[in-house]
Length: 211
Image 1: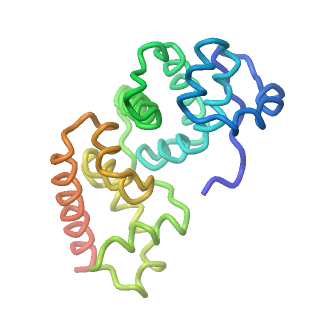
Image 2: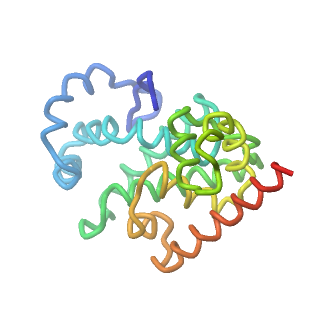
């Protein structure tokens, strides 16, 4: 997992709010997402609480689906938070705010890396994340899970994007099917089908590497 804090982000480009985020931190933790959205709409400084809460989880999520560098992801996060802030008035409180934010991050990530025509050759995962993924597949023997860590990263990178992202959301982000459906904007039944197909494609690539 992330061992170092990310850089400070702002809803205004090229401006840092590190000190203010630190000052507001205690107040941030006392409020849930619905309250943070409401307060942010009334006073923009409260949006820094949303940034503080989501910057590390979104960094990990983007890294897991894109394989981008730290610098690229931090630049992308800046744009994502600006977009979240701009569209905050269109957020429907009946929806999960977390899923709404993740959907914006996912769409922005795919759009950015597609424009750059970059497909990840390998995805960076922490050792515990690799074991977490390996543990979801019965065909990977227990003693192989640590040894096969690097290959797991390579296999994930080779999966079709639609399969890679459902595995990441389900087994690394630990999202429920309904949350994944909201993030990907697909019917919940489709998510179950994608997860099953993703597992089959993963197993196929894994088996080919064992030959």
